[in-house]
Length: 401
Image 1 (cartoon, rainbow, N blue to C red):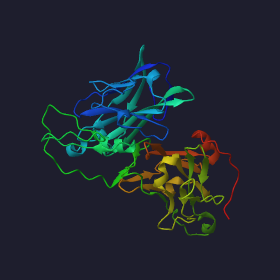
Image 2: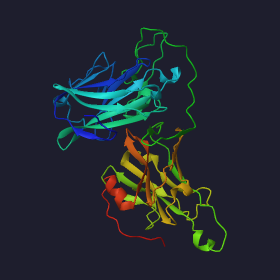
Image 3: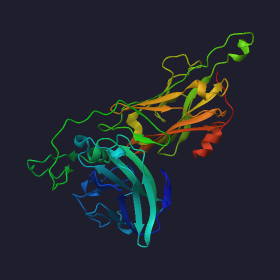
Image 4: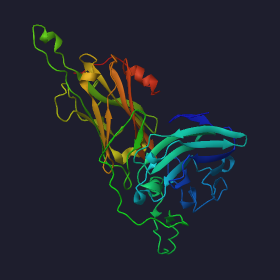
């Protein structure tokens, strides 16, 4: 079975082997597993399995010399709700490497009777670490989620996301043994290391391709404020006898659907005056309503990064409240800004649709931050879009005051 991003499958076998496979060997890749509780955090350093801590004390998870990971689901401790499987590039920043340099990589899941599933991994840009997939409990059974979400910052950033304090040791000279409360994330290498370089700066902007996911960078204990902005243009005004009938502007509304981790769902939009709140659920707020497209700042949705761990997913969308459905003339552009991350640009560059609603980008919580995926898919209305993304809201006709 070949899996797509976000696809979930049941795991009907007890003994599994997880392998990160790729056709080339130019980059040094390290795999790891984080055994986390319901909050997405490890209980202690012993729940982080990698080359420096090759076997969990329960015997449930083992890291092998070939970087494959063996899992015995019957031995998973009761406090563990999820096993996050990851891959990182060794010394990525100093070597100026990232996962865009890898082609044809895949995560493969094997059981006792052979291969169960393959998850192709592609469309990465600046990422140096990937959450490959997640094995999680669901109503007393185990399932696999094909995640494929990337991070910058390597293994240290992943460890911080999952609640582990990292001590990064730099050879040579041989370092003293790190304190027991710290994790040494440097593997001893037999070949010589490259000369140290300054860390390369992150790109200031990344323009997403359709289906591409890029994760926001989490620095410290929480994300900063996430600012999502929509700007668009008005069609060229024509002169003439019938101009007052043909010169009709476009009123695009920026909005979002949200799902919190307590299963609360809803929408933030000007229609119906559902402007949201930053300090109270849903921790998402719409700044205002630009009915002309002439306001330089456009329309903006803000997400309070302090409460990212309470939000499961956000679907950013826009709909034409007034005017003809002419997306090509509107030239809509959505930007996503978060402190410490490159500006992400999503262009509404698919035209020809006369449908009035467009799902633009999907933000999904992965390890305490958000992956941002370009969607740009058109629908007749918000209710049709809701069904396509399995949100579950009930919709009624509304209007602006």
